Length: 131
Image (cartoon, rainbow, N blue to C red):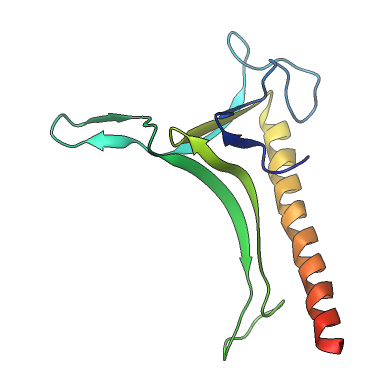
């Protein structure tokens, strides 16, 4: 899967009512589905209500932040991340899956993508140290 899935005005994934993971079963109403959603509400505190707002951009990512300076840990001095949603207009996003099993596979593929980026950064750092 290519990341990020969502950006700008594309804040709902998939576009067609087919599970983006297995591509076999339907999502969206009236079908059963698992939804990964996130975002923020632009609040009117006086009225105690909120909603999407054009001045907000939503995002979600996972990040590896390796140890540095006097810290300890693996994959030191590596900082990398994988976005699923970037600059989502209105501040919110949704990704629909046909099942929790497909949702789980999706999350695993997201972590796999992060691990691939960590390995690439590790090789790049090793090369620059050897040059």
